[in-house]
Image (cartoon, rainbow, N blue to C red; front, side):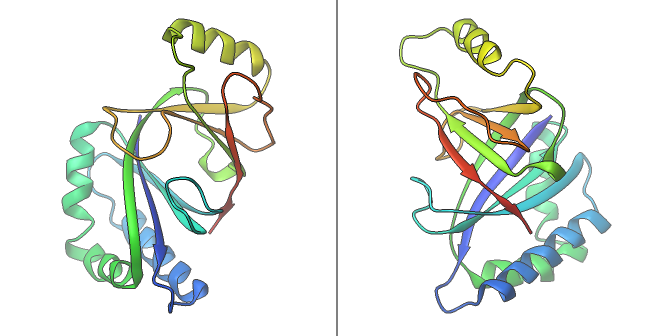
Length: 181
């Protein structure tokens, strides 16, 4: 399972409720007329981050594989989805995207209220990173995503959860409360 993650925010003169409604309409168009390989989407409002310096939105588009990413890219701006996409794009000011792969855990998108962005500590092997993370998260209901091919401005890993997760220490986490639209 892959996710195309898109961070964006409206132009300063655009009201948040108007912008959020345009995002909802676009997501509904995708759900009603899904392209091949599309498995769902969700949008969150997020506080400022190092890669989006203002309060913004984070969209997660779930996809079967990399071929589905190309299909979504074409389908998002065509047919039944074109008008809705173009309206969001017209109201947007800045955007950045990334591609993540589900590494572990069940899909939680509808229950996510927390995200923790983190990097593998310098000099650590991936097995050491995963073992240490697993030990710290024992019993937690989370899923872990890993950035693919360095596509995206955010850290390499994103942990989703419904409840706060404590990862202070070597991971240097950026924990965010998120609100689904």
